[in-house]
Image 1 (tube, one colour):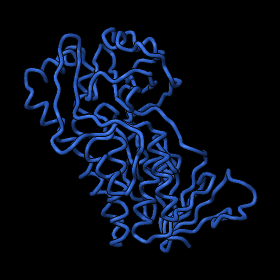
Image 2 (cartoon, rainbow, N blue to C red; image 1 turned 90 degrees about the vertical axis):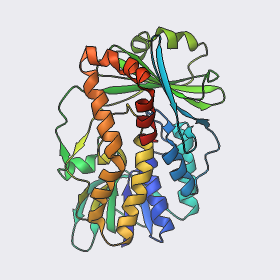
Image 3 (cartoon, rainbow, N blue to C red; image 1 turned 90 degrees about the horizontal axis):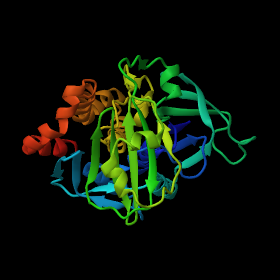
Image 4 (cartoon, rainbow, N blue to C red; image 1 turned 180 degrees about the horizontal axis):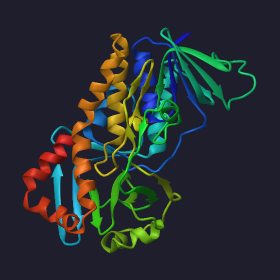
Length: 353
């Protein structure tokens, strides 16, 4: 029986595995996809997330620092700088590769497949793994893996969360995200959030000649149709698109709890409000550390409170902004109000940093 089985080898799962390996725990990651996995993502790490990455001993060779957040709505704009160092814009694939290399160097084993059944007892977890090569001649798990603990890091629409009955109905309008990259020299060292009726566009510098542009909306339109609502931004995209459009959603995922006996949820599987404040990857890295710390002390039940402490600011602010988005008059006032109250806007940005 190994110490920890991680279902899902994205950033949240790999960060959990790295923390566990650093704590001396024998860890296996089960992931059905090979190579660095790309997905729709804003690709911005807040300063706390960048620091958490460094604490893991992970060096990302590619990326571009950014020093704050800027809101743009037509002629209105307001920006706030971080106080404790820069954030990091980095391609999702580059981040995944760097985490995978660090995990490998620490002896974490990554096996192909997916966890499709979980049976927990007082002593551990038995997980049924499918989708890998036949037979598992060189792997430690076979068809069934025994572990003291299982971490579900299997994404926004976590199958393990669903099978354990930990999800809740989301309610409200469904929001979706679309993202593409452009070969354009970044014109600013801020992450820009452009506002328009019906949606937002996020511009993240991820290289010296590359930016990511993600759009979020509850309206089901094509990427180009969404982008046409931001003529000022569109005029700056004079370089060619370099990646296909990728989508994700619905974004909001409500979770009953993040600990179910010997199974714990991390990353997007642990619950998600919206991508509006850009905290997804940073929260995943921080909560991975908290999760393993709780396992080390023999108190996995403490992880629920730890996750809530780490996420409450972003959950509160994101819910307020998404709520304002539902009412056109309130939505039109978000950026003008932030511009009139720059100290409040700055405090909000720094509270999430």
